[in-house]
Length: 115
Image (cartoon, rainbow, N blue to C red; front, side):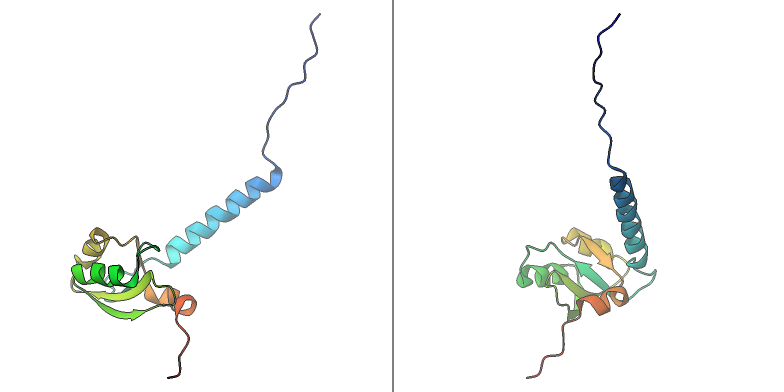
């Protein structure tokens, strides 16, 4: 009656579904744990990684944020914005993310250097 044709169906491998679920949960947990607490006076700010230190410091200064300390990654600095509008000014100056500084303290601190 008809011709036999091989029907090729493309299916994802079973492990790909599990991997996608794992990545989604890691992103959700990170987003919730790294969120800045309401009313926080000090925040960690992530700037584009291709910016040099001078560009990062100029962007923080243009947003009227005092630099508290730097981290092991040059693109992430801990700052103290001057008022409630400080976070929006930091974003306008080029900041990608604002992060709770206590959440990143263990990961991005520079080791103590002896002089």
